[in-house]
Image 1 (tube, rainbow, N blue to C red):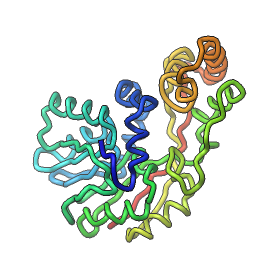
Image 2: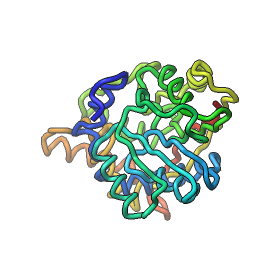
Image 3: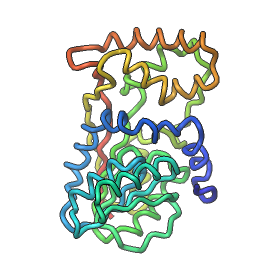
Image 4: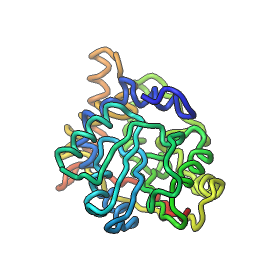
Length: 282
């Protein structure tokens, strides 16, 4: 585990008990985020033979998808700070037989990448957690070839992402108060402000910075039961319920069932994810 460097607190967090579910539940996470990954891949348009840096690759789904597109003549390096997720990603790469894919356990803000060694930097929800984002992106820019493309998926504001903020609001009076990151602090919604995103990327030396809003239908479960189970296994509500007594957990579960039942339809529980597709050039 990267225990030193500019993101040491994030390394501790992403290797703690509250976040190990990202590796354990990766199949359900992948299914939920599949349409977002497809949007990112369409915008990035990786080409055969290209060299790609995948930041915050988690359990490897984005790395595998990118590796399929660049083909055996290309190279994809996924980087993540979470030990359990990296182990899952490495097993999946071996199983897929994609020799052009590799996953590295490292802090992307500090790892000594070779200068000018990538044609594309991509990330599905992996860049909102840098403690010093301008410095981190400046470091990453140096790993890119001149004119290399950058395509990032990041969440817009919490209020626009009711699939998560609404669930938390539904149980707010039941769970312990949860800390809310400040506007300059890392977190799930740290890229909500487009002016801040542009300031970070331009401050790191990137050009042609643009943000396109996308509202992507996201299937949270086949029904309210499944959506509720996921919320209690992963995310802010789950973290608030660590070591909670059974009675509290059942009360929270009942509230979440009501919240998700209101969004049930023929296709299951589907709610929009409000994201930015951020593009830039080195």
